Every structure is written in C-alpha cells, then in structure tokens.
Amino acid sequence: MVIMPRSSQQARVSLLPREFPVVRGGEEGSFTLMSSSHRVFVNLNGTISPAEEARISPMDHGFLYGDSVYETVRTYFRNPFLLGRHLDRLQRSLDRIFLPLPLRRKDLEAEVLRSLSGVPIDGDVGARIVISRGVGPIGLDVTKCPSPNLIIYVFDLAPDAVPPQASPRSGGGGISVVISKTRRNSPRALDPAIKSGNFLNNILAFKDAQDAGAHEALLLNAEGYLAEGTTSNIFVAKNDLVWTPNAFGILDGITRGVLFEEAAEAGLALGETNIPPEALFSADEVFITSSIKGVVPVASVNGKTIGSGTRGPITRRFQELYAARVERECGERKEASAAPRAPGRKAGKQPAGPLESTSKDS
Image (cartoon, rainbow, N blue to C red; front, top):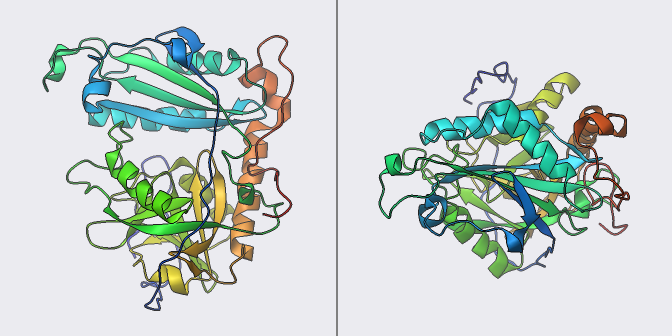
C-alpha cells in the first residue's frame, strides 16, 4: 500500500495489509435512474440574475475549449460546508492551467457568500464556482485571453438531488452503480486532480450509468484499477478495513479528505491502495462520497448485490461521523455569520443529506 502525504494534512497512516482480498467475478444488470430538477441563478462577474437571463460571449474559451476550472459547494442550514477548502483546491486547479484568479481570494469568498444569500431559493442550495479563461480569438494561445470570467451558479437542491440513502437515519438501502467501459484520464495527459470544465471523460462514463439505469458509474485507471466515480470517490470495506483508491490519478475529494480526518479521530482503519474492480464483488460494503451527496451506500455493482444488499455498519458509522462534522461546521447557531438569507425568505424543506432522510423506504 502506498501512503500519499498531503501538504495540508498529516500523512495518512494505516495498519492495513498490503493487498486487497478479492474474489473474481461479477455480472451485468439494470436499475432505476434517479432524476433531478432545480432552479438556477448566476452571478456573472458580480451581477446576479436567473440563469436564463445571464449572457456570456460565445468566444469565451471556457465555452470554446472547456478551458475553465470549477468547484461545487453545498450548504447545510444555509451555511456553505468547507468553503475554504474548496477555494484552496480551486486555486490549485488555476495554478495547474496557468489561469489567474480575477479577484482577490477574500473578495471571491465574499462574492460566493453574497451569491448564496442573494437568491430567492428556500432551504439549502448548491453552488458551482467557475473561473473561465475569458474571451479571446479562436486558437490555443492563452495570452490572448486577458480577462478571466467569474461565474457562480447557485441552484436549488431538489428533494431528489441527494439520495435519501445518504442519511444515517434512512432505512438502510443503497444505490446501484456500474463499472464504465470508459477509462479515467491519465494524470500524464489531463490530470483528474485539475477540476476542469473539460468534462467529456466523465460525461461518457455517466452515459454507461444512464444506459443501465444506475445512479453512478465507476471509472478504472489506465492500469485497470478503480479510480473514482463520475462525480464521486469510492470506498470499499472488507473485514472491518476500509480502502479507497490512491490519490494519484483522481480528484482528491473534499468529502474524501474529511473521512480520513474523522476516521483517524474515531480510530477506524482507512487506507489508500490500488483496488482491482473485482474487489467490489467480494466486499462487505461499498460506498461513495461527494460534496453534494455526502456518504452514500452502494447496494449493487453491475447488477450484483454487494454484501447483504443493504447499508452495512461501517458505512453507517461514516455517515454518522460526516453528519456530526457537518453539524459542527454548519450548525444553525452559525447561520447569521456565514450566509444570511435574503430578507423575507422563509425556511424551506431541507433536502435529504447527512442529517435527515426524505424517504422511509430508503
């Protein structure tokens, strides 16, 4: 097992064995596709409007070439969860593609908070923070794009945007995933650690999930090991040990990092290693993580039931740890200081997430 040190955190230390135990096998299947609808507002370089009223030049290289980077944040109790970490990763992505931040970091944070509080949406929201290369002539010379654009999307978290299975209080069900035939970009080509607007790799993989009626698709890396989901990180539990793919060659998720911290505090064994896809079928439990969804149990892969077919105790424990972290960071007592609601806004129904479920049958 390779332990990947991080500059902002302690090295991840584990007492796990060197190899993941696997049983070869697996089969295809079909599932039910989840859908989502939501309202979207946009802050374009400081002007907030409904998305359909926002206007940006078709000569922006973010549109022409996918030459942009972004972060996705969600709120709990109307407070953005770990916004600072997302902005740190945004800056790392900017540095990797030689794109300057068009405003100071503290001003960007203030603009995000203003956007979150300035839209007429009840309840919690998601936000997508985009920095695009800006307008320039057709061609690849980035020096001809002198003014990057800032676009902050704020969107409604509809009840179906977050699976009810993400809540530790849910009935214990899980989602279905498939292993995509599309491989993850090589970090020696377009590094997945850059959270860029060039998203075709993920889109093509998610098409496999749609075709199978599944919730998510998992991508393998060039060596044939598990990498990540299209918008998630993957975790596999076996014999009370929890594994996740090595950070090299994936997007090192913010939620993923939180689970490492919480596992260390709780004394849970969590480590990074190369995981062959066959390991999924012999696992006791599998779950995925993302900033929007939190911690979500997986009940089946390619139509084959994982473990008992319901959420296991390890997954539930991580859900509980994550929910407690959310409460500490974003509890209602902090609401006024972080992202106040617009005047007159009434509290809306909270979407399912780490704190509660909207379904008794999940």
